[in-house]
Image 1 (tube, rainbow, N blue to C red):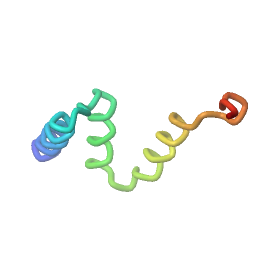
Image 2 (spheres, rainbow, N blue to C red):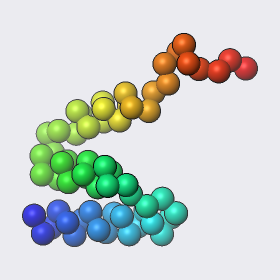
Image 3 (cartoon, rainbow, N blue to C red):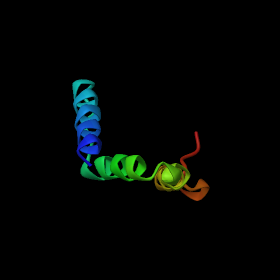
Length: 61
């Protein structure tokens, strides 16, 4: 578990230097993946769903 927390801190540090610090839910996602790499597809699917704008809500140009 200590290795997982080290990785999370390192990723957060790198992202913060780029001006994009991680939210607690981002850190939790990284932990879930590191503890269960088989969960990657589910994690990616949930992110796509979260950040996809339904067609009926899109602005037309």
